[in-house]
Image 1 (tube, rainbow over the protein chains, first blue to last red):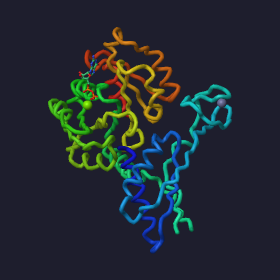
Image 2: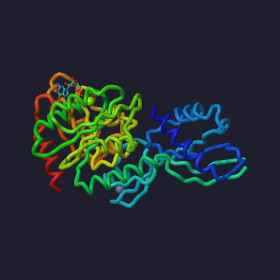
Image 3: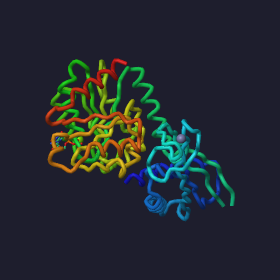
Length: 113
Length: 216
Ligand SMILES: Nc1nc2c(ncn2[C@@H]2O[C@H](COP(=O)(O)OP(=O)(O)O)[C@@H](O)[C@H]2O)c(=O)[nH]1
Ligand SMILES: [Mg+2]
Ligand SMILES: [Zn+2]
C-alpha cells in the first residue's frame, strides 16, 4: 500500500522531469533508497510496473540503489557503518552519534533514449 | 542514451506541506503531537483519558486517522473536543496533505493542543512528516518487549515513547527493562512514559509533561 503511493509520487516527478524533453523515450529511473527509509524495493518495483502498464512510460524500469547506514561519533570523531539498528559507537560505545546516510529516498536521474 | 539529472526527494510534496503546517502551527502557538502505534495499542483510549483531565483547562483538538470507520472520532466527540475524521480508504498512513485538509475543517480558535491519531501501523507512517512538534510511539505490554528491534525505523524517528497497558504486566510476558534497553539502543533520545490508559495509573506524569510543553 505504502509502496503504491510512493510509486505514484515517483511517476509524478518523472513526468514533470520529462515534460521539457519532447520525443525522448524513458528507459530507466534511477532511485536511491536508504536502508532505513522503510521502503521495500521489491514492492516498489511491482507497484511501478503495475502503474506504468499501458501508459507512455511502459517499458521503463526502476533501478534501485540501496544506501547503507553510516554514522559519525561525536565523542571519538570516528565514522562507521551500522549493521544492526544499534545506535552506539562501535569504537567508544558513546550514544552521541549522528546518522550521516541511510535515510535517503530520492530520484537521482533518468536514462532516456 | 542520455541522462537527465533529477535529484529530487520522492516525498518532497509531503515535506513541503509539512513545513507549511509547522510554520502555521507555530504562529498559532499550537502544540501538535503525532500518535503512532500498532492497531489496538491504546491511542484512542489515551486520548480519552487525556481529554478528561486536560480540557477544558487547555483547549484541545483531535484529528483521527482511520482506514475505514469514524468510530474513534465518535469516541472523542463525547468529550466536546473539536474533532475531524480522516478516512484513508485503505491507505496505510496519514500524509501532510490529508492533515492540511483536516486542519482547515477544525475550529482552532483558542486551541493550544492538537493530537493527530495516525493509522494503526508501525511501518509506513514513520516516513511522513505531518508538521508535528513531536512523534509519540505507543506500545502496549501485550505486544512483546522486542518491538523496538522489529520496527527500528519508527522508534528512531519518535521523540516520545509511551508504554501503555501497564495494568496487564502481571499477566503478560513483558519485561519493561528489556523493552527500554531495546528502545534506547535504537534511539537514545527517547523520552519514556509508563502508564495505563485504562486505570489512569501514570497518566498524571503524561499530563504534566503535556502542560509543560504548551507553556514553553
Ligand atoms: N487493559 C488495558 N486495556 C486497554 C488499555 N488501553 C486501552 N485498552 C484497550 O485496548 C483496546 C484498544 O484500544 P484503543 O484505544 O481503541 O486502541 P487504538 O487502536 O490504538 O486506538 C480497547 O479494548 C481498550 O479498552 C490499558 O491501559 N489497559
Ligand atoms: Mg484508535
Ligand atoms: Zn565513538
